[in-house]
Image 1: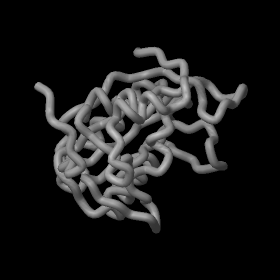
Image 2: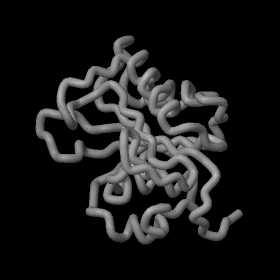
Image 3: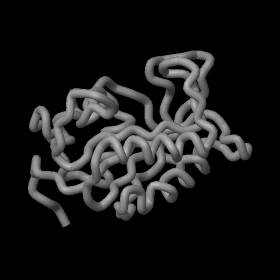
Image 4: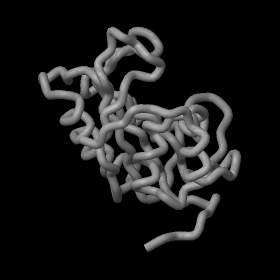
Length: 173
């Protein structure tokens, strides 16, 4: 069933990524699966869809960094962005996330991509996520769970953003 494009998007979108084993020794794919399950019910929002999992090279490129597992989760409804950020960071922390430096390899990264059509400049989280529209590893899985989503800041459709995004090797897991 297709939906007409709408800027008035009613749900919350969260990108998931990992490229290091978790504290329990599980690989990044299993960590992402567990994180998606942990998202179910945060701030009272049920998990309604999870994309396929994709393996991608690090972005920006880093020869010392293993490939990432990436996906996107869709939660039904919206909640205050600062509470969603707190909830996602709590999941990251429980799964062993260490923030050593920007773009460092990580056990888990959860990014709020959009909270409905909410526009927010600062403080964190900036919404919609300012770099999501440039990241094929976010846009392609996002198209699987929310094909009708448009960037509420620019009005661009996912198709337009995917066409404009830099090329990237992606392998479905």
